[in-house]
Image (cartoon, rainbow, N blue to C red; front, side, top):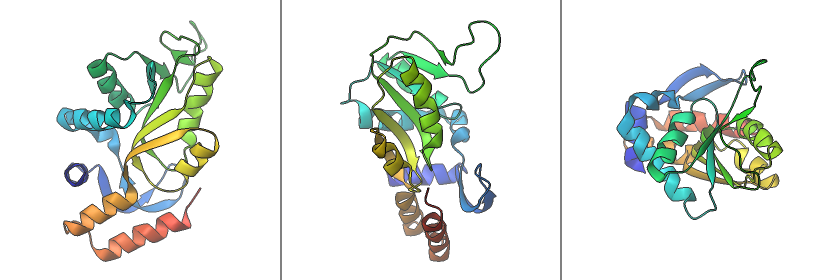
Length: 197
């Protein structure tokens, strides 16, 4: 996985500094996987790694968490001919007013695709309407687990989290390849331990 971490760092998908997160807290690390849409080879590689994590589980359909995970889910869907569903972030007040778009087969197994997890809140926001439609959700696959509580939180609710990388993996690789200092590693580790959800 070292080459993957180095590639993500090279394209600026993993950055160090002082960043304000969605939650409002300041973080010494920022992971921006929206950049993947501009790197099809890297996107395909990540989609393949995610598929390897879940291919032995029952999968009838996929649902990417909007919006960053949608290209990853699409790449897996196209390569392995697995139907996809989309959860709307904003439900329209006209037309069908659906929350979940696509052909829904109740009792079918839906695997959720996400780019990264922190607390697991976005994943749970996606799972809820899927289950409301009668789909069975057991597996969630992510590129990066920030190790801030998502795995425990999801497992407590009966979901399996499959992560390609953890933040510990990322820090270890970047330090070994002299991309970041041991002080940066320490500061990120302290931040993570102080911000568990």
